[in-house]
Image 1 (tube, rainbow, N blue to C red):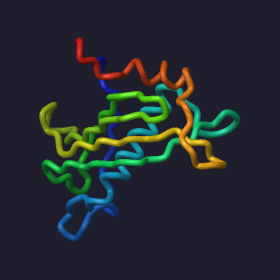
Image 2: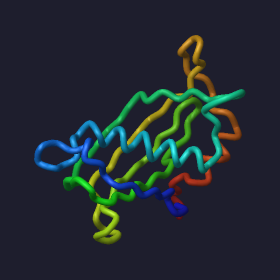
Image 3: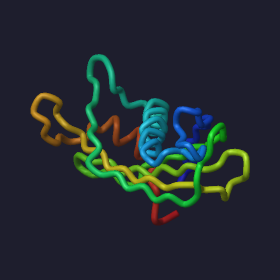
Image 4: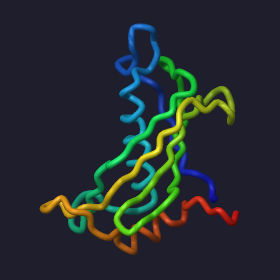
Length: 141
């Protein structure tokens, strides 16, 4: 596998519960934020002419350790599978100041490319396959 996409951010006060721990629903917001930046860097277009429409059909969050208020977090993302109309992505959230092995959560997402008018799945364009395929996890590596 090539190196995952990486993006750092700081936890804001509004994202934590009264114990200063990131509220569980925020992990999916973080995943959305990270995948948006990942896909933006990779090249697929989600606005304007020729915009793509992907819907989340599955999200699995595995919590390992809490993330706390004002902490720096490094999100890492990579594509694990590209099907006919779906893309699987792994996102990991790591504490950004404590080192490489400070994983806090893993989030697996499945997105389906859809026709916005009908809501039905459609094939993923070749350009998206090429852009995200560079990040595919490879069993032969």
